[in-house]
Image (cartoon, rainbow, N blue to C red; front, top):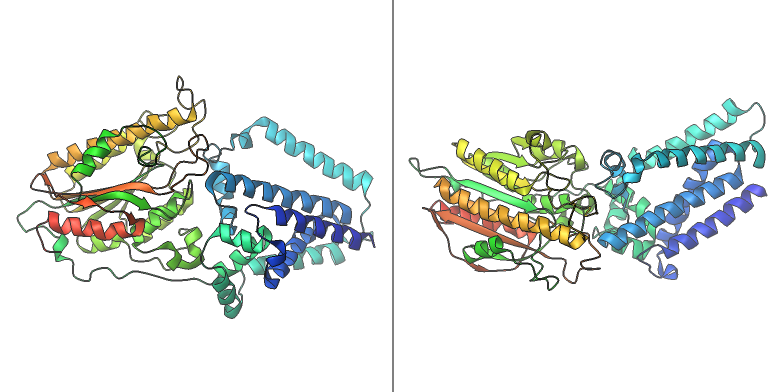
Length: 499
């Protein structure tokens, strides 16, 4: 009776909390399969706590608190980046622990946090010792408790990593498309969206665009200088003036636009976070939705990586380098980037002696590194740079003397603009056919600037240089995955070959 009452009350309360998770949808309008998935998911959470305690009230309270914390974290994420939790977020827990500042969670390494954990463990011990007796009969740990725990672990392990019927995974995957966490939570609720997302993700969706088969157009003449392609994914970069948010002049960007083959606003697949989705869409050259639920974390498995712009240029004889002045294990880049066509990886270790701007390696150091690499490399070169300087948080300890988050962001934004000017001047000095592409990965996570952003697009340009002169072009808004074709067209023109 106590078990049934505890579980029933727990389930009702958690379903109520689930109904309040942002973004809210109509609870009564949820599909039956979603309701059943939520009940099953929440029941498993209760079962985990009961399996380790054999105390129904304790299990109900602990599971209720656990799920409430998950909902609060999801709501916080939604407020900041317009996206609630999804199942792949749980794969990020190790990197959150390694880089707490990046996730605005420095308290994770504070002594007070560990003191709180110790106090919580003490409360659990006291509860189990003095408040609620165990339902497990004396002497039945090994023949009841342990087997039950093993069976529960096997059920959860099977759901997470075991073989599932292909019809089940395909059916769930179909119902979870498009891969939009906001829609998932609004339609299914948070609990069902997490579980269904994990099951649907097990149905791998493979996609690879068809690149041009023949690539002589990107080869230089036998006696000519080899071409250079530099692509910059600039952290949180956007033209605030064009977005109508702030009067910040960016002369480097304006100069680039005046000589660009194409420039304008670019639709990126994220808002405020998940840089790797922009990175992947740019390289793959096709919309993220075509990769199914892998679109939520394209680098999580990459069992069958698509053919990318790096592969295509590599096939044409280009050396390919990926430059990112941070931990390449973050987002699994150390494994993913070679599979996506890069021969050389450059990480924070290559900038060990460089003074930081705020918390991260400055953009100007990356520009100098790329230009030095291009000057040294005699064969054709494709270098992709993913900057870090303007990554959040923009807190008070970041830049002493600069008082507001917006002003700190603008300080780094101007540095990114100087990077543009430095790259343009450096490419002109190289005297080689060249393409310079630049785009912002997403808008900044900054409620002080806009909450939410009226336009989540960022800005881009593609420039082509031939015989020391920049090729003329025109403004053209685009989607991020379309930039690769513009780069290849500009490269063909720069190498004086018909597209």
